[in-house]
Length: 159
Image (cartoon, rainbow, N blue to C red; front, side):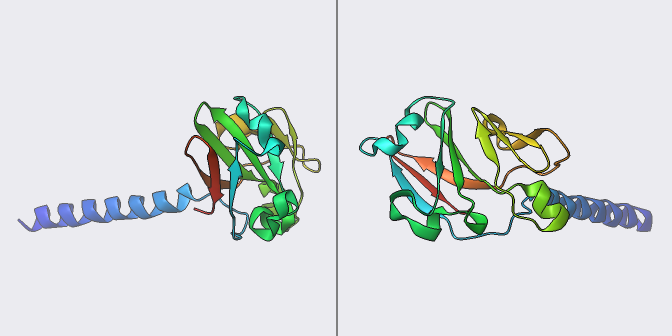
């Protein structure tokens, strides 16, 4: 009976350790959190008409619709909003996570169709695959923001 308790305790300890380490690995955000909360009107705001087609993107900044810092992203670099499916949108911070993690430098990525490219480290991030690295030295994905779509409004906010 003592052996059974030891095995049970050891098994529970392993499961608990794996659960905790699994939670830590899920958070790949190296970019610090900033307040993000804005709505895009796809029906009446022509500035965002590119988002009416799957695979297109727009860049939102503090100057967009006078939204200020709530649409600026980290270090005022802006936010990429990308239409991935018919009713699905992704939002990413434009700050390169590799440069920030490596030397605390805030570098703004550029977008070429469905790929975000860091001008400093040349890491390429896929907008259609949740901002994951395609090539280059970067090992972290772009910081993701939450999105919802009700058929007219895209809402973007912090998780």
